[in-house]
Length: 409
Ligand code: AFD
Ligand code: MN
Ligand code: MN
Figure 1 (tube, helix red, strand yellow):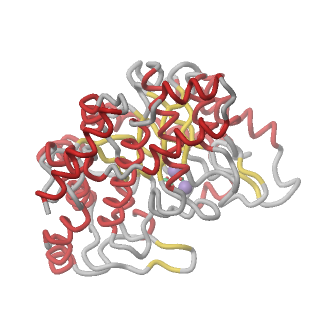
Figure 2 (spheres, helix red, strand yellow):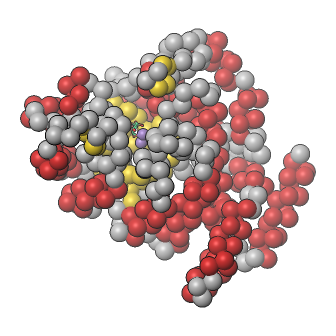
Figure 3 (cartoon, helix red, strand yellow):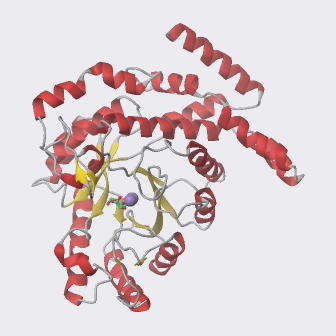
């Protein structure tokens, strides 16, 4: 196999070189790619209709990091792990940091939880009760203390706040509650830390969500300051939204903070990244590569956010990471000179054909090369590599069923 794939790599490299692609630069950028995986993606999770527990699921945040290390081992691009508080709270963050480092990992974004406690049922920052808003602010300050303890750069905020019926809440009063609470939290961040404000059109609020779209998040970020940025969760758009356009606009406005990668058929299904609409993922990456080329996409936080239900959690994380490697590789080989000329000439078909050509290119030999140089055990097929490792069976025996709580707890 490796003989054939090496030939395929050599062939692809010569074709791309003939097209004027700087293959060394493409490979260097693919090797530098970093995608953060979420601790909660390794835990038992499900839907409101049930959580079907799997054998071998982590029973602690330490075991979540063990599993995250597998996702990194078999892809080479996932060396940080987002944590969710209080699901991942530990006695000693120094100890967890050391353990993470021993696995070649580090703690990434810190995600406060102001949506599961009974007190938050009518909202957190949007609550009419000042004591509840105060409690949510205090929780966020505790999360910032954790960031300081682990050296995290991102406070990743998602609010379930919203209402289910017209009249239930006052939109503007809630907006002002949010602005007040957000600025109190923002003031606690040091100048190396960023507040990422995520948006979502609905769920659990079924009539309105206080931060419902990218514009509301952008307005709140702009009011806060330079270190508040928009977090784009791919599952948080109404059907038909042009996410690649939103990404380009936010990038150009200096407001793109990061991503929660997943995929949706309908809305926030947390499906495997790239599994439903790989072309959309590629077009998003095309905007990111253009932004990188223009020097305006250096500090974007690339994170996966998936709560895996029925697939093996680590396999699904690896599939997501491979989809992101592939999207990046395809976006990197777009002939941007030819595209620019076609756009200037209003040559619609010509421009579209340039974009489609890169997407149609089988970049797997390129990814095989990059993953080989990253020391990945089965660089041609990370999922097969993980399956051959026997890790899942070993953990199923070691951990049994039912250790991990629902939704990442
Ligand atoms: C849920 C929310 C949102 C958030 C994630 C982790 O919809 O995406 O980022 O949980 O808290 O998926
Ligand atoms: Mn998210
Ligand atoms: Mn979500």
